[in-house]
Amino acid sequence: LAQIEGIDWSLLDVLKTHETVNARGTFAPLSAMELSQIDANRAHLEEVGLQAIREGKVAAVLLAGGQGTRLGSDKPKGMYNIGITKDVYIFEMIVRNLMDVVNRTGTWIPLYVMTSEKNNDDTVKFFKDMNYFGYDKDYVDFFVQEMAPASTFDGKIYLEEKGKVSTSPNGNGGWFISMVKAGLCEKAKKQGVEYINIFAVDNVCQRMADPCFVGAMIKNQYPSAAKVVKKANPEERVGVLCYEDGKPSIVEYYELSDEMRYQKDDQGELAYKDGVILNYLFRIDKLEEIMNNKLNVHIVKKKIPYVNAKGEIVKPEVENGYKFETLVLDMIHMMDDCLAYEVVRNKEFAPIKNKTGVDSVDTARELLKENGVTL
Ligand code: UTP
Figure (spheres, rainbow, N blue to C red):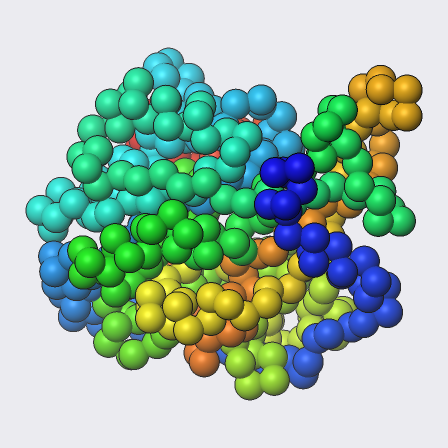
């Protein structure tokens, strides 16, 4: 009963409308701050960012509540060992990258780690066992995101076991609300935090609390900012940052019309070329303004294990229902503007989604080696 009371059943409302409503507005391209422009102003932008970090105004939020089903490990994704001749864990790489900024500024950056009820205990224990990979544990906090029910295609709830509704983490869009509920927004504000850099667990090359990125956002007074890479080709499966009805917005690759996908600008480049890499900066006061706004609910087809009427556990071979998620990318559309900040793909984009092939352990290892990391 406690579980039922704790579930946000309004998530399922999307099932009534998802086949008929096309809620998207009118799109227009957005100009990114490109590498040449960043390089020309780098020293100054970095100085602005370094100062904000030294003043304790920047915190980092690691999104680690996902299930990593494509990677197929039953442990939290961050515990995955990508080393070859020695142990190198995904969490370790993330902490190491953040430590570069700590060492440069002489300032500990508060690190808030979002987990889910499925992986929280393992994650917290791993950080402890690994002595926080050298990070000061007083600057690391964990908070647990909420869960969403899983349903059949016609909206009936599955049970995971007798007396327990089948649930999965409710997507990465609930991070700020969960952080507030855990008292960490208050804590951050008391510590003087004004900007939050939120990022995915699986991109082992990315730079967090990147002084130049922070400086570019502050200097140009944006409420939010997103690291982007130029799309490798029109078909690349990344969301693109653009405007929608005059507000910044991210269109997922599967939502792009062919017209937008292939449209060129005056320079002959793709008009919608700025692919997001799930590394965003938000002003904390702007997050508080929008935190009670309803986020879109996305539905994802999944194989959902369940108990049948005889009480037997069934593990389906094919997708048999939906899980419901809200996404951090939809928060960008609630901001008045968003700086698209270009980064070098081969230095900052090595997502680990799969074991092999595209966006995999293999491709990430290659990039890490290219960037001088010994594995
Ligand atoms: P993905 O969309 O890649 O999902 O998450 P995933 O769960 O890691 O992997 P698959 O799709 O099951 O294979 C992007 C980022 O958002 C976090 C993930 O941990 C990752 O850092 N995330 C995702 C959450 O924190 N909570 C969620 O409910 C979902």
